[in-house]
Length: 203
Image 1 (cartoon, rainbow, N blue to C red):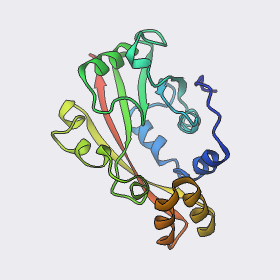
Image 2 (cartoon, rainbow, N blue to C red):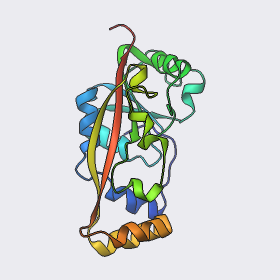
Image 3 (cartoon, rainbow, N blue to C red):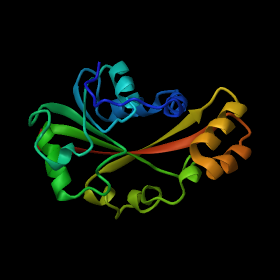
Image 4 (cartoon, rainbow, N blue to C red):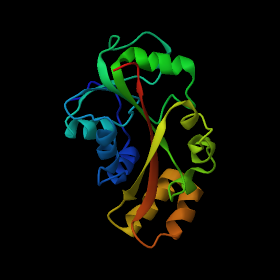
């Protein structure tokens, strides 16, 4: 099992958790870009445990670390990981300090995989404008302008019925959820995730 911070999702969070990426497209993409199978993977800030569970299912040896871990000493020992996955936390525009901290955790040639919402999908309509949805994916943006490449994963939030989808969206997102739910014709929402990826250090 993953060694991750104590996280107890609420009933509502757990229902959303079951809907996200049922096809496991996101961990499959991480394995293709890492790879992660059979390797030591540090996972930064997976509050729900969902991604940790799916990386373990893909064969990764996962240790989850706190979201602020890059701000201090290497929490798992320097140079102990093959892959560092940053899941929707930190790296909100990577700077030299963050990259140096990430490199300290990785073995030479280790892979850094940073996930952020990409937008241009149904889910982004629930949250409204975010920097992730625009400038971050530009060639001169904070990621592609700092040596990262990008892969966009086209996944879904999938529910068992339209009724469940609408009820859960309203309960979770209020008026925005009601608007999006009213327009649904099938029980799923498109959900695009950007995986910004690069190697750090000499192999």
